[in-house]
Length: 226
Picture 1 (cartoon, rainbow, N blue to C red):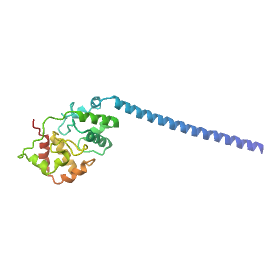
Picture 2 (picture 1 turned 60 degrees about the vertical axis):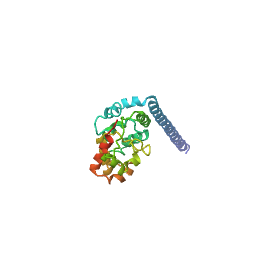
Picture 3 (picture 1 turned 180 degrees about the vertical axis):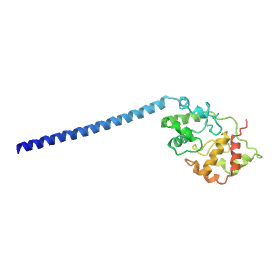
Picture 4 (picture 1 turned 120 degrees about the vertical axis):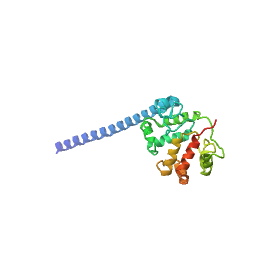
């Protein structure tokens, strides 16, 4: 009987040691994982804070599609982004990265955005907002069909009478935008292909705009007068 109790005691002791070891190992693993995540977070923030927007614009290859000055896009269906508000630019980058905005040429950009951290997106957006836009202004001649449509279709309500003083900072500046790009965005919003962020407000208006009128508006927005 004593021998039996001794064996039982040994077994209990072994299980106790195993349990303690497992718990201790779990705590150690959790602490190590936590430190690793903390280190990654610190490293990402440091990279974002230590690199200027101009440098990021180059290293993240933004210039390849949008031009070295961010206003001479590689293709006419790519947007000019110089001077865009930081709030709007940031929201577009976030939405493209997360797949919320997936229309037109955004697939090409999404392939790059997974390499850009949240802090870097903020830095890039701020940098773009400081760049000079294309020179000139919208023509407001009464005989311009585009100018008339810009008023009657109430585009000025959200984007400003000059196309570059939007009602809210997360609305885009559209004056001087490439006609092909502007036209594609209007069509995509009307058809629901682009359906994110603030586009719901615009979609309510676009069903009143015909394809021909969209072309006229796009051409008008791209026209600059010195």
